[in-house]
Image (tube, rainbow, N blue to C red):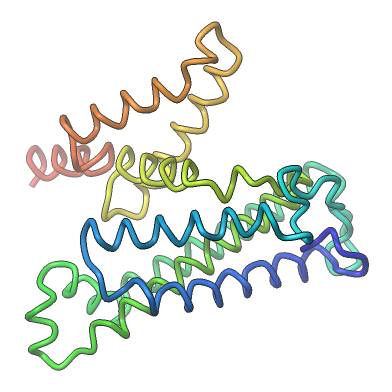
Length: 242
């Protein structure tokens, strides 16, 4: 969005976040009524639908994507052409996203989501509209994904179709499983490890085997420590110090 004339970085990011939120609301209504593998398949199918829409849509640049997205000036004052300024800008956005997630998880709304995760029929019996709660959670996650994607476009000055492919969804799942499902720090650690591995392996003789190595890591995580790194460390702490 930031590639359009007259659209500043902050407005481009806000526009991308808003559009992702609206799309999340639409897809959420279609998918939240399904659970388990059916929910995963529906969301994956919708993601692939959007991938092919992006290929055909003229405003996305097709297979080439959007190149040369200008970093511009933040609020017309701070130039984001400096990598240091861009770093702090992204860091502030990260802190905002993390604080929003933490506040949501520890709010009464988040407690209801935990109850739905543990025992949805019981939550329904207590009078909660579980579909509404799940829809809001779905929309929040879509908005945060849009925020991250819009920010990445400004940072790298590129919007690629790779970010809309199902491989990206797989990477996010791998990051979460590796770091620890159900934790706040787990996905952060998982993302750091996966991105670092991709960067290091791409510069090594094993560069062509990046996907295979990540797949092996995924299998090992599922079979050996389902709680992830943070989850296993938490179990060890509770066992030895409590």
